[in-house]
Amino acid sequence: MYGTATANNGGTITNGTWAHINNETELLLNFGTSSPLDELEDDWDIISVTETQAELQDVSGGNGGTDTLILTRL
Image (cartoon, rainbow, N blue to C red; front, side):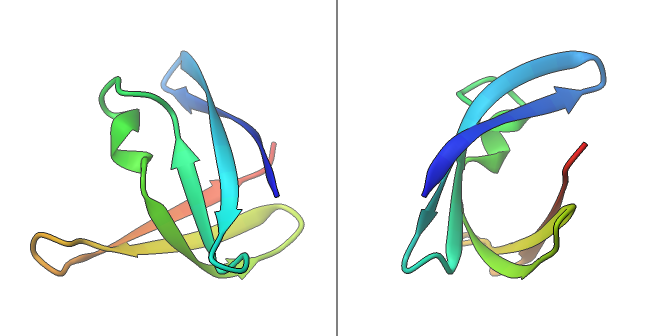
């Protein structure tokens, strides 16, 4: 499954894409190469999903830290 997404970075709107990967246990995001949204381009583990919100996590390959991303449907 795949689709389009819109990110609002304090007034700057950027269009991107998303796709389910690895039997729909991960979400791949792509908002291009412009900072800071380029940091979202990764394969995020899906932690929880409701009708209005998705919680995602990514373990950094560099230092082993965990990033959490919460997406909200408007």
